[in-house]
Amino acid sequence: MDKSIIEKILAIVVPCYNEESVLYETTKKLVEVLDDLSIVISHDSFILYVNDGSKDQTWDIIQELHSQEKRVCGVNLAANAGHQNALMAGLTIVQDKADMIVTIDADLQDDVNAIKEMVANYIKGNDIVYGVRKNRSTDTWFKRNTALAFYSVMKKMGIKSVYNHADYRLMSRRAVKQLLMYSERNLFLRGLVPLIGYKTACVYYDRHERFAGESKYPFSKMISFAFDGITSFSTKPVHYIFIIGILFVLVALSIMLYSLYSYCMGNTIEGWTSVMMSIWFCMGCILLAIGVIGEYIGKIYYEVKGRPRFNIESVLID
Ligand code: UDP
Ligand code: MG
Image (cartoon, protein in one colour):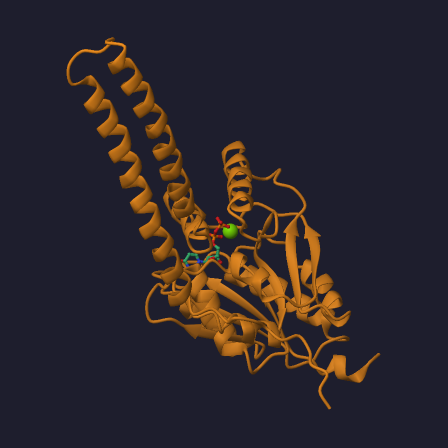
C-alpha cells in the first residue's frame, strides 16, 4: 500500500438542524466507517458536526459525543444559516485539516457505506466523487415526479447537474478550495460543484427512509430551493422574454398589414384598425424593451457573482 495514501486525512462534514433524535446512531455508524477505513486512511480522520442553530439538544449531544470520542468534532453556528450555508461553514473549517472531505446529511438516509467506495475512488485519483441514488423507490409519487421535472427543467436551462445526486459527495482538498472561491450568496452546491472540473466519479447507493425525526425540507422550502437552483445558474428565462418580444413585434407587423388591408377593403368599424395596430405593436415593443434590459441585468448577474474564471488542473512549465 502506498504510504502517502495511509497518511491522508478524511473529514466527514455533517450539517445538523434539530437532529437530536439521530445523532447517537449517526455517530455510531460513521465511527464504524472510520474504523473500517483505518487501514487505508489516517487515524486522524474525523467527523465534523455543524450545528446549524438547532433549537433542541443537538449541540449538547455533539459536545457530549466530543468528550467521549476524540474523532467527533463540532462547530456551533450562532443562528440557523440553512443547509447549504452550514455545509459551506463545515468545508471552510476543514479545508486545511483534511485531504478529502465527505459531506453527508445527519439522518442516515444516505448509505454511509458508500463512503468506503468514495474513498476508493479518491485513491484512484478522482477529485470529486458523487453519491448517486440508485432509484427513488423510497420517495412518494409526488416527490419522485417533482424531482424528475426539476432535473429536466435544469437540463433545458443549460445547467450542469448530476441526476439523482444531492449533497452526498467526496471532494479532495483542492476541489473544496476551488469551491470556496465561489463567493455567491444564493448557494446551490449541486449546481456549483460540477463547474469546478477535475476528474470525477460516481458511486451508487440505496437511499433509506429518514432514521428518525422529520424532514427539514417541507414542500414550500423544496420549491424555493428548486427556484434558487434555476435562478442562481441560468439567465435563460430572461432571454426567453427577449425572444417572445421579438415574436410579438413580428406578429404585430403582420396584424398591422392585415388591419390595413381590412381597412382598405372597408371591412372595419371606425377605430378598430388603430386599436389593433397600437395594442400589438406597443405590447411587442414593451416586451422587447424588458428583454433588452433583462439581457443587461443578466450580465450584471454574472459579474456580481464574481465566480472564478477558470480552474487550473495542471501546468507544464519548466
Ligand atoms: N439542515 C441544516 N439546516 C437547515 C435544514 C437542514 O443543517 O436549515 C440539515 C439537516 O439536519 C440534515 C440535512 O440538512 O442533516 C438535510 O435535511 P433533511 O434530511 O431534513 O432534508 P431531506 O432529506 O428531507 O431533503
Ligand atoms: Mg434527509
